[in-house]
Amino acid sequence: MTDRPRIYVTRRHLEATEVRLAAGYDAAINEDDHIMSADELVAAADGMDALLICVTEPMDSALIERLPESVKAILTLSVGLDHIDTDAAKARGIAVLNTPDAVTAPTTEIGMLLLLGAARRAAEGAAMIRAGEWTSWSPRQMIGKEITGSALGIFGMGRIGSTVADRARAFDMTIRYHNRSRISFDDEKSASYYTSIEALLPVSPFFMICAPATAETRGFLNAERIALLPDEAVVVNIARGELVDDEALVAALRSGKIAAAGLDVFNGEPNDIHPAYLELPNVFMTPHIGSGAERSRAAMGDMLLDGLDLLLAGEPVANRVV
Ligand code: DGY
Image (tube, rainbow, N blue to C red; front, side, top):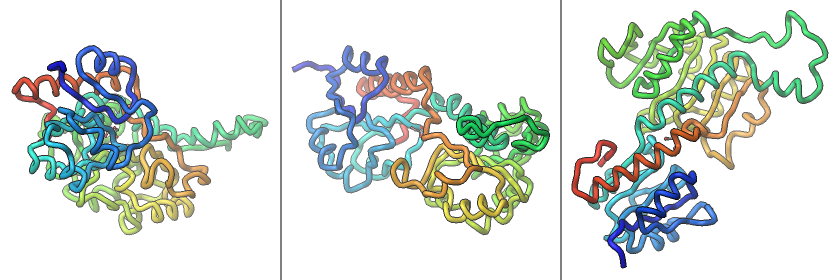
């Protein structure tokens, strides 16, 4: 027996995180990194103080109710909380910690990559070269849309949305946004606030989704709202696939109503994403790697373990959600 915190780790992590886990905690790791069933998780949680989970482990109320009494905290390697029933955790007195801030910069990078990649047809260009189909330079070849000096509509102006706005300003983009509530005058930095998503969409030739998946936002980008976008708009999603109605987006990408989409997140990811995304040349995709950069991923692990240490010491924890 030791008095080191006992923690069950559902996935393999970066070496820096695993080294810290081995040095400072009684950590048991799901060594082969398979996706665990609810039953496996409940059994593995036996006697543990904390669970270190990822977006791959949905923690609904039924599962949370089955967790052993020993579990005091769920640490999720994500800023997103849509896979956790935080009310159920709160009802059981289980703290939930996440990783705000640590994911902001890398997710913003992927947002800009997708915006540029979709607008400038990066996936099509790379595929053309790889297929040996680039036979000459031509004034008409691969004409994309330049983001410089255009307007970017941002849905969700939290940490990530605001940082996207900062990066987009370097491209002289005009920033327009909709958020549950208006952000402060200083934080707006001259961005224009639109009180409804319906007002924002028609003035967003480039549109980026940065809002969390909630009961209010799920499926918000449907056929009616897509129709409100300017013709040939470019849409980027770095939030969650659930915010998009795939059938509607696919139809708009096929018709040209939407010129291109940049997607890092998908309904049904990773094994059951809409098959049309695999075929459509005007979709530039990455596999949910918003936070997948070395420094930030390690910082996410540290943020959670620092938080656990504070929690177990009875101290306040800045990244505690409930
Ligand atoms: C997040 O931080 O929510 C990312 O989507 C992955 O963990």
